[in-house]
Length: 306
Image (cartoon, rainbow, N blue to C red):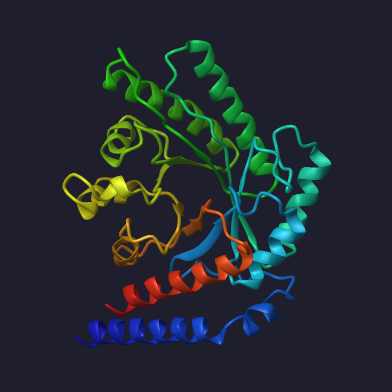
């Protein structure tokens, strides 16, 4: 009884603390931006909010990205590749620039959580599949060199006249090859629930054929995750396969059960990064990020209080 009461008191305290942070506005956050050191000595006690550059961060170079994120209290970033981003980290980036980027993040309050590429392993064309695998390996090297811990990849689609089980087996075999390669670089391969072969039942079927422990599942907060037998059922299909990141989108959109997802993640003590990947147009992305930060804090406070 004492342990249960202690746990309830701790959750209530954390919920109140998070609510206080949200009300405090940006004063304390601006102060933390002056720090050049990370508070990363211990394992995180709970899940954290991060940001994927995708659309809102496309025009930000690395100094701007770090400054904008820490001023709204977001201390983890995932960098998108292949679309002419201002931060400019690509597989063509030379060694000296990779090292410089690594040092910038290491000397800031913001953790470079990972890289996000668009490589996929569904093509019936053997040459395209081989090219995707080899390009992924190049991105894994990039992720390692810049100090990130993993790479986002896609499954991606089922194809007409190709049996679904064949496509799933091909994706799994590709991931096994990539996962073995990634393990040598200390990287996690983050398979995002994306494309027609990326619904959670399909992801589960693919992962049942993956033997490499470096390959893990990345949730994508997609409305379809709540269809069929419901969100909790689909979540439970992959909860034991989750990696250390997932993607969020517009937290103000009621079409996805963000609170339920947070509740389930907290219930299983998941301590990964929840990365905002947002694309709708806003006049001020930094202000919009601040609003989403406060909304996310509310979801977490609610989950910790139950």
